[in-house]
Image (cartoon, rainbow, N blue to C red; front, side, top):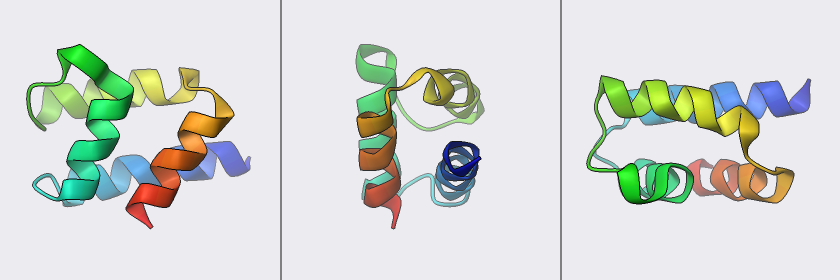
Length: 66
């Protein structure tokens, strides 16, 4: 359950703060080379890929937004 909460908080943060350094860093880590900027498409892709991220990567992303 904690994992789901972290994923939702990351998605909420990125959605609200699209131009922040933290959001760009999270997207670059999770989306990699396909990341071209934060828009609705990038957030949708983040929503798909975050649950597949390993625990260490998810923790790192959560730490970035906090």
